[in-house]
Each structure stands twice: as structure tokens, then as C-alpha cells.
Image 1: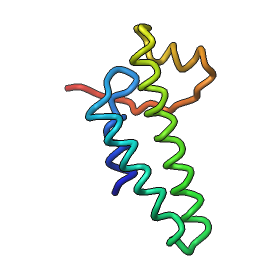
Image 2: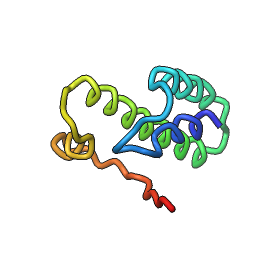
Image 3: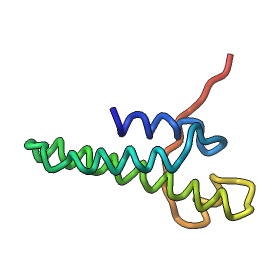
Image 4: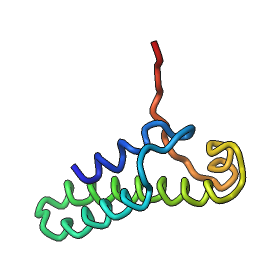
Length: 91
């Protein structure tokens, strides 16, 4: 749930961030604290990877937000970041 909540805040990127990145980083820290209790190594690796991916995305958004640049997607491309964006459809 914690990873999903933080991931949800990112689903409008590269255009918008929902919520507070600091709160989401705290959630991901709490999720990381639970990893030692996961016995299945495949599940543990999957969750660790998810935490790392979302954490990097949040860190990049925070850095971009203070950079003065206008296009987060371009900012990421310029730095070799390969984030996956959710496709949004508006009706």
C-alpha cells in the first residue's frame, strides 16, 4: 500500500505531481523498513525495485522543481533518466 500510494502521486508526471514529495519519500522509507520481514526473495526483490524506481522519480521531480526548467520529460532525458509515464486519456 505504501509504495502504491507514493506511486499514485506520480501518475500525472511528467506534467504534475499530486501530493507532497516529502510525505511520499517518508512512506517509501517506511516501506523499506518492512523489507527485512519479507521471506520470499523474488517478492522482496520486486518490492525493492519498485521502491527504488519511485524514489528516484520523486527525487528527480524535486530536483527538477527547483531547477527553473519548464519540461520535466526533457529534464529527465537530458540526464539519462528512463522513467515510464502513465498514459492519460481525458474524456
